Amino acid sequence: MAGVSVQAFRRQGRRFGAGLVCSEMVSCAGIEHRNERTLGYLRVAADEHPLAIQIFGAGPAAMAEAARMVEAAGADIVDVNFGCPVRKVTKTGAGATLLDDPERACRIVEAVASAVSLPVSVKMRRGLRDGSRDCLEVGPQLVEAGAASLTLHPRSAQQMYTGEADHALTAELVERVPVPVVASGDITSRARAQAVLATTGAAAVMVGRGAQGNPWVLREITDGETADPTREEVVAELLLFIRETVRELGERRASGFLKKFYGWYLGRGCAGRRFPRPFKAELTQIDDLAEVERRLLAAAPGAAELVERLLDELPDVDEVLLDRMPISIYGGG
Ligand SMILES: Cc1cc2nc3c(=O)[nH]c(=O)nc-3n(C[C@H](O)[C@H](O)[C@H](O)COP(=O)(O)O)c2cc1C
Image (cartoon, rainbow, N blue to C red; front, side, top):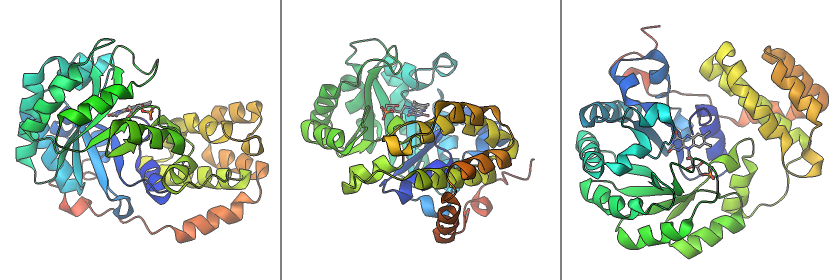
């Protein structure tokens, strides 16, 4: 998820039981131009495997080049984005708009699949317009072109994130393709995951928004663990997330990036872990992350010990990729 699935989010997801994690979408144009921030998205830590890195773009050659970089970065899967509904992306001919141009979409998948030895997966929406069933026509063609698995978010691009994901369509797609299909959309609990798996025949479910500030849902889905985290556990995970994100993005970028996470962590769940609304609002006004940490610890003093324990248990970040990358992603800085 763009603006969400940073390395800290992915590593946390793996710790809480996710079988596979995926990067934010990475622009192939950004890779082509060696944009420093784009290349930063290709940083892979040793403890996040298996990891898919997702690329988006409209040109087969540039996408193939991006896929080679993804392979060099150490990802396990190259994922191709045919789902992004955002105008900034679709107006360049990338993302969900490719569902309207299956011939080009197939050329992209072919180019990517022949550029790398990694499996290539495709993430798509049902189609561009409401009620569209285009994914059922395009999906099998993408498999013919070389996609080893498909992930379907069965909303239209027009819908953005409104309404409901129509997993009846996921079931139809499963019938039509010989590769694993992953169901994405509105998976927010174990019961929902089980129902979607049972009614669609999908090979796996993907959890998006449900895991924002709530890694515990992953444990619930995978293990049936239903115990709610305590306030201290919630704050400890948030503190760890803050520290990890600072390491990854630097203090200045992290400070803005993290603001949306405060509400996600502190806002939902059972009454016992809820924090007063003004407290959450105040945190988003603070740019100094040391001050954010102080306030969080004041609200849940027991979190200090927990976060130290988490830090002890966490393996050192061993970003294995850098010397294997065709260029140094820090060198141009
Ligand atoms: C903030 C945000 C960013 C997203 N970014 C991406 C992305 O970069 N690539 C992608 O394939 N899907 C992206 N998605 C879509 C999700 O992967 C997922 O398909 C969708 O949110 C439905 O699943 P959910 O109900 O579990 O969130 C994004 C969704 C959100 C809310």
